[in-house]
Image 1 (cartoon, rainbow, N blue to C red):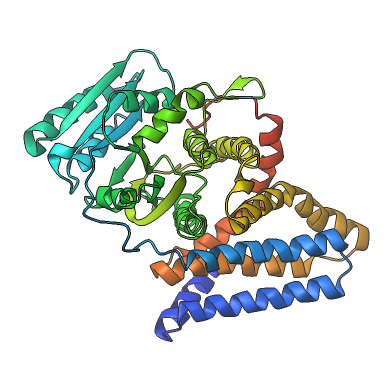
Image 2 (image 1 turned 30 degrees about the horizontal axis):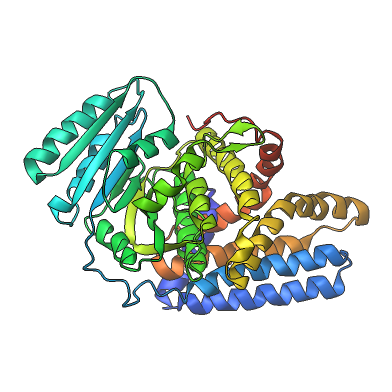
Length: 436
């Protein structure tokens, strides 16, 4: 950051802390200002009916996520914290020798009856020391915690989806928790996930993923805020209606029998004539939702995951995620209308707004100034304020100085990442993993 930018940032933080300003007051003041600016924009500036409508609808849509999620009751008494079915942890892994031992040992340290859970680790054709680290973790877990760890060794890579399916095949447990091989869980994570399954209608529960390497650089700090808001606000809002649309691979639990019901179709999934080899978590969630089952979110079931720390890694990851989002959003659109009317309308609206976003940015930032000779001040001010609201939402809960990176991420997404969307559509049949 520049010296000037850092000075402004420090003054804002000083103002918030020293003057004991309630962050929620600031949040709602910003919401009010945004709505006023949107009103001025659509009444006094000739941008056409479509763009006026888009401007106000996209703002209300984003704000509604924050408001709806506030009412999610994850502590409802019907979720029994003492419910203790048998549990298996599934960890498919490829070339994660640096983290896999810690991942397994963190699970072994979980606060759950040792005779009711097991760990299944699949080495998916790694060419580093992943297998050796798995075996070492198996030995330590058995010696120190009496925890059973099964290690499955595949000499050839088959893909994460096949690795997850193998974990299901290898277990007779009532619930299976999938953990990414570079994610760490807290001792109470298991119970905080499992309690929801005391409701027999619940099929899957997403945990809350925090960024383990958040303070490496500006990029990881941006992702730290992005992860928090995406889980707390967006998954929280979806959970109100029992329809979380992506139980993330970082840490999510499934009722095993429901996974078995859809596993063959999930493994053989094709899209536009090409076998699906990425977006496994969103895809599996879709198969579960299509059956009419309930999917929820647990803000108290924490996992800590490593995110890309270089721009090249990050951009590749984001492109892959956009491809899976496009594919699974189109698939979900064929059945999501059967869910709660507010949920289905909100979901379809969110998909439409996202797909139209590049068109709106081109029109506002390029065509409008060129055609009228006017600079889009109101658009940029509104964008900056919405980005600030995004950061303040994070600050209101976390009281963490990283909130400013939420502002940066929101701007970065709108002005830069959004251009990946049309490219993702064009190259959607290219199924290369593309993370490393």
